[in-house]
Length: 291
Image 1 (cartoon, one colour):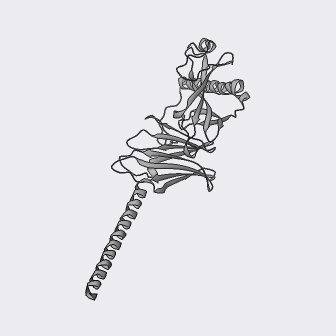
Image 2 (image 1 turned 90 degrees about the vertical axis):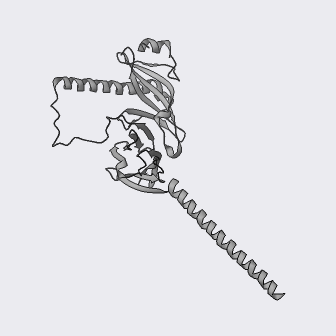
């Protein structure tokens, strides 16, 4: 009887031991799987850092997770003022399954913030502007656009400017002055009374934009669109962009609030009343623009 009882006791002990071993193996495998999932999808490491000329700001390029089977690599830009984070932006870089690395970006520091070019062999370059005010905007570069690249002084063989080149420069300068005057005229005539501010910023392409207001939900800005069909006016779009996580926003997500015509000859500002690009606009606007 005692022998039978001992056998049963040993059997229960062996069963408990086996269960404990199996349970331990399962726990270890679950932990390894969780670690693998974290490493592949969420692990963040700083790849490269750029410091502003005054030393106050730093911009970090980070990798997020690991690319699998030639998939895009997760990337993150983090702008900091000292120890404090100003803004961040998450994106992906398509580079034939390659990881994010120092050669994946190019940074140019401007008065209003950092302008970044993110590069991958399977994508057009992504242009990102990280403003010191916390604004973030993105766009895509065309094949011939460059950022922060200057010709080598020893090998530059560009011909000296001709009279035609000087005239072209003068025309471009006049056009830029007209656009600047249009920005100010539209603001003074239609927007200043609404309590908007006036902050001039530039996109990664160098396009001028005026931020009128910004909060945790939206950014309202004024953008030069184009010249009118009859060449008599400069057209400016008043747009609102939703603010996403970490304060990022993109002009690609903007909605039209109104469009204004700045008449070159008289300096008059005419509101279109348009809230969609398909709207025709007021009779006064159509008459002034020839559209």
